Length: 227
Image 1: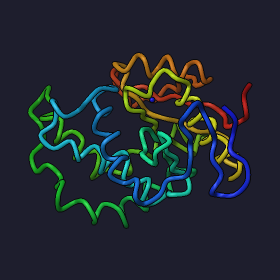
Image 2: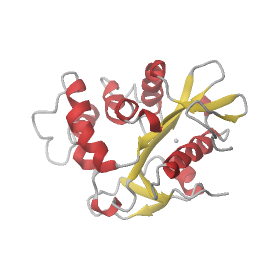
Image 3: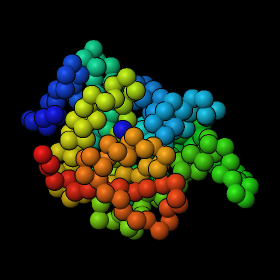
Image 4: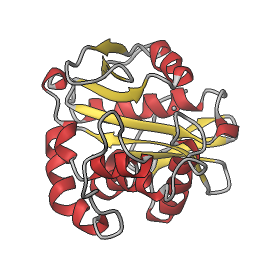
């Protein structure tokens, strides 16, 4: 929030006792847990949301469903996913798939808020994320067209600070290069300062987006391999 894989889809990348490997369907519950435990500016979202599952339905599960080939997990060595990186190689295509295929699966549990928030308020956090869930076209941002891929990366707190995030990122960038994708972006809350420092170290640079408010930043970089 090491070395790059080689070979076929079953290859793994080792870092200490953990490995980065492709996502498997049995990892779905672990992905949800990781997303929930890191979903509030890198911290546990459960004290802040009535149903933090809206975060997983918006930012984690749709990628595993629509783009399993670009979903990788950090395996703790015992088969449990304790971190992930996931995303898409084509944001515009992904947004269309989200609208047509993913949203009908979850809209019943997380309906769109019916009333607009009061002036000066975004409503509850659950409502704010539900609005994002029901607006996948928000992902298509003109200023980010030159960075067609995007990603999300999260690690459980006890697995942070060990180099695993860098290994996950290198794995994802290698997968994008294999697909001839030139550049990738991410969108983050400025309040998550530790994540911003991580992205800066990995060569991400801020991209100005007119529609984003002061609390949100877009970062991008090429997929070229770095030392």
